[in-house]
Length: 433
Image (tube, rainbow, N blue to C red):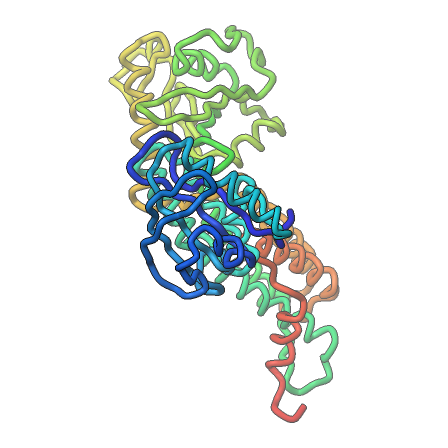
């Protein structure tokens, strides 16, 4: 993306309004506006009123001047607040660009997300905060706005940065042990100490994953997955929740062989409902993956057996001798049972969001966190083969896996360069060495 040009765009919502906003960002703002508001010094911070002079018309304007670097993008930014007629706003943008080009200035229309991209590029936002802005724009409920705000405020990234700092310190200790084992300042970790440290990191990341959701993601709706044993009535319930015949159902075990996804509106929430094959002795890879990427797991089983961390849905109430009432048992053919379940799922999503349990993370971020957990788990397997009371026999292999995990975490909020780890290594030495 070209970041040297001065960019111009309409920044107010589409349609007519009392006030419209035209935003500019870049190095050529002062010469660009010199002919259009000659009495205003846009290089000086402040809010001023003026007449915006265009070739065929003049309009009153409020001009907000934000010189670099104290602006949203880190560049000089000017906002022109003018009457909010869509045709007028477009004419202003077009004429500003044309007049700039005639005078040899590099001026163009901004592409989607470019102001936020420049803010990230100049260190004003972390990557997770930038994604939070996109999620905030796409939010369609109070809960989504709250979770998106947590992303914009950096709450998700802050927890990850704390984890990354601990991981970087651990990596530094291992690498110091590899390269400087003969230095008196370097304390070698035992296998048990290393294993425990890695386990703590895995637990922390796993907790963040369980607290994250696609609800505010720029690329996903909340993911509700139906899991459970074969022939437990998952596909029948899937059809009932969708209120249409999407899946073929049969009493024969194994009728459902693939993961199927469908969007459904549950009490005003757009939810991605996912049906999976039965949970047999040898777990289906696609079903396990769908479960790992879920926000809520509905464990369907007529006996009511459900793993920890899932929502138990006792299916086939119509076949039970003492059925009880929803949500203890659910009959997919009973409209009231299904509606109670639909509302219950929506309420669960909202309550978790209100309690702050859902951090708000995109599929990209969650995928990177899962990748980091995978690398840490491999590192733990490497060191677990050694004597717990001695040093690791393959520290370089463990360090390489920790570096992969650190790279994955860094890709969410910003990289942790190798020099930072080196700094941690040498900071443990005595002064003068």
